[in-house]
Figure 1 (cartoon, each protein chain N blue to C red):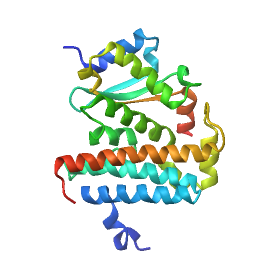
Figure 2: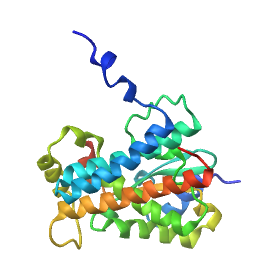
Figure 3: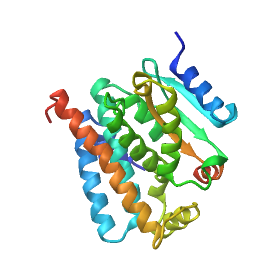
Figure 4: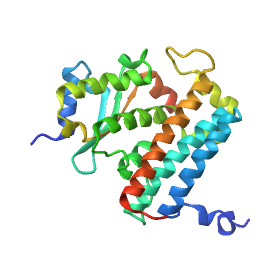
Length: 164
Length: 85
């Protein structure tokens, strides 16, 4: 059996910082499209993936040979990226809240799950003060909060004068 | 000079968390990140949890120390279990 990686996909594995950055921007747009189409589980997965890509972009920017031993551990990737290290305390609080929500409701394992399965997983969680469709609510909040992380990445890139 | 992680652990313990509920680590250069896993958060919405620990930091830490907190995740023990499923 030929190794498929030899023929396809290999070039898309952990490429460069710019590739990760563009993937982050693309995935957050896709998350919104999925949300609008009421595919809330995939919207959650794709929004979290966008945040993961943005962390990856800044890790690779600092260390182009980074081996990604963190795999999909969002917390480790976030720490390594230094993206949430800010000098404005108010903005820091906003980003901390945003990251906390994404971390709490995203899982890399959702890529192996159907939308229904993700819905069942989300609905097992306890929510206070949320009326109506919880799954939709979580999807919207994960999307909005992942967007805060993407905006932070975009802002930091501009401040660094990093051209793509 | 006291390390920021040690300082934050002491503050959280004085504010009613137990040592077992804290899983903080030193990251980058004198920064801290990690998890607070507590039953206190079980009936609290996410924003309230973050406001809860940050109100402690606001009261007990100077701005330069608060800026050394990279991110602290707030979870209830049930959520850790759900995450591990």
